[in-house]
Length: 119
Image (cartoon, rainbow, N blue to C red):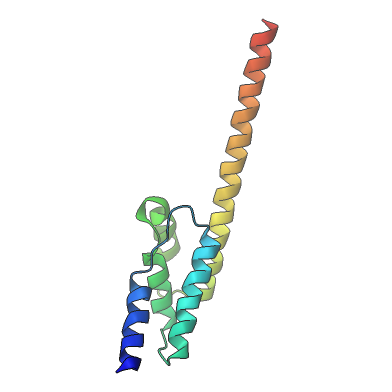
């Protein structure tokens, strides 16, 4: 009976797994991988495609809907390893873009301040 309880508990955690606000996607992926390892330790294997679908379902629609649609468009199957890598790379590009936008905004603000003080 305890074994079934453990399986149920782990499966619930897996299927309810969601990306939390302000958590880097790498940490989210690590947590997900831990769930998969816990399931494997009780001889509960998750098919590769199900790993992908669960992972993509855990992402917020607001932030990742376009990414997910682009990723799955015209694909007949998805590899968990490829999706994981693509997701982390997407997040890194997004963070770079946000960082450069903030830097540009600060630069524009400084130039305005300089211009106002000269005038």
